[in-house]
Amino acid sequence: MEIMKTSHPILCAVCLLAAVPFANSASAADLVLQKVPPLSVEKTSAYPQNLARYHFGAAIEATPKSQPIGQLQLSTTAEDSNAAEAALLCDDPTVGYALPSGTTTLLVSLSKIENIGSISLLNKGAKGDVTVSCANANLPATSPQWQTLLQQELSNDALRANVGSREAKYVRLTFNISEPGRIAGLGVYANPQVSDFTTPRAQQWAVQEKSDSFALISYNLNDIHAKARALYVSSGSNPADANNLIDGEAATTYSFAAADRSPTTVIDMGKTSTVRRLSAVYAPRAGNLQFYVLQSLPGAPAAESGMQITPDSVFLDDATLASLKPVGAVSDDGSNGRASVDFPAISGRYVMVRWTPSAQQDAAFSLAEVSAFGKAGQGDTLLAANNGLSFGQVNGQSSDGKTMLDGKTMLDGKTMLDGKTMMDGKTMLEAKDMPAEPAAPPALPQPPPFTFIPVIVPTSP
Image (cartoon, rainbow, N blue to C red):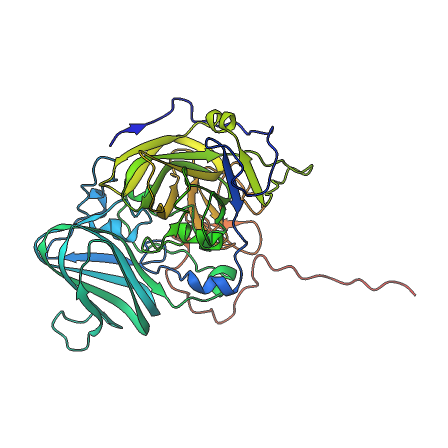
C-alpha cells in the first residue's frame, strides 16, 4: 500500500459544467453522477442508531487484558496495529482490535437500559466462535442471569445478526479464538425509531482519559443521524441504498454497477466542517481509492442566494476531474479492503470518493462505509449541530445560523463545552460553582436572578 498526498489540498469550485441526464453516452473518461433520492420516513427504519459509542456514554473493557484509551493507535493504509479495545467504540471502522488465540471477553456498558435490536462487527482473519449475551446489571461472569443473544462461528467477513428486542444495559461478547485476527466496526443497535432523526440522542461522554487519536475518531462527520446524506452515485440498481455508506454500520454495503469503470460517490456532511482524516471500508480488490473534500459541488450551479443547487444528475468531463485535487489516495493490492488518509485540516462540505480498479473486472464494486473526521485542537472548538458533536473549527457562527459567543459552542442550548452552564439569560455560571446534584430548595427561596416580571402601567382613559 502507498499513500499519495497532495501538497495543496485546497480545492476550487468548478462552475463551467452543465448537468445532463444520467446516461451511458459519456466517454470512458467522463463521469455522470445520479442524485440519491431524499431519505424518506419509511426508509429511516433501515438505519438504527449504534449505541456502542463513546459519544453516547458507552464504555468498554476487555478481559483478560485491557488497554487504556491513551494507547489507541490510528490505522494507516499499510498497517493497523492498534491493541486498545477503545477503537471498537469509536467511529472509524478501519481501526481494529487484535483478537489473540484463546478466550477474550469484551464488556460493553451502555449509558442506560436500552432495547437492543441487532449486533454487528467486521472480522478479518480471526477463526473461532463468539457468544453475545446481555443483562440489565453488571453480573458476575458465571451468573446464569446473562441472556444469550447469539452464538455462532466467525466468518472472515461481517457478522450481522438481529436479536429481536432485548432490554439491556450490558452487552458481553465472548470470543473463543483458534487463529488470531482482528475485529472492527462493533455495533450494538437500538430498535430503529423515527425520533433518532427528528430528535437526536443527547451526546454524553462517560470517559475521563482521552488522547489525540481518540479525539480524532470519536465522532464521524458523515453520520446519517446528524444531517449527513449520500448525495450522488455514479451507478447502482437502487441509489436510495447509498445511505448505507454513512449509516455507521460497516456490515451494510452499497454496490455499484459491474460495468462502472470508476465507481464514485459524493456525500453531503450537512454543513461546512473542518476535516483532516477520511477512511473507507470496501470489498477487497486491486485498485486505487481517491478522497476529495469539496467546498461546493463541481458541475452544479449555485443559486443567487448562495445556496447550493443539487440537480438530478451531474456531468464531470475528463478536464474537470483532472482539476480536482484529492486530499489523499490509497493503492490496494487486493488484500486489504480498507483505506485511510490523514492530511492538513481543510474546510469543506462535501466528501467525494472515487475508485479506479487496477484492471477491468466483471464483479461489482461494493463500498461499505465512508467516514470523515476533524479534530478539536488549539484554537478549534467542537461544532454542535442537530445535537451531534463534531470536531472542527468554529468561525463565529454555528451551522444552524445561531451566533456563538467567544468561540464557544452550545450543546443542548444550555450546556457549554467549556464547562459553563448558560441559564435562560446570557450570564454563565462556572461548572465548579454548580452542585453535582440539585440542591434542596431553601425555606424561603430568593427570586431567580434572571426572571423578568413585566409591569403593566395603567393609562388614563
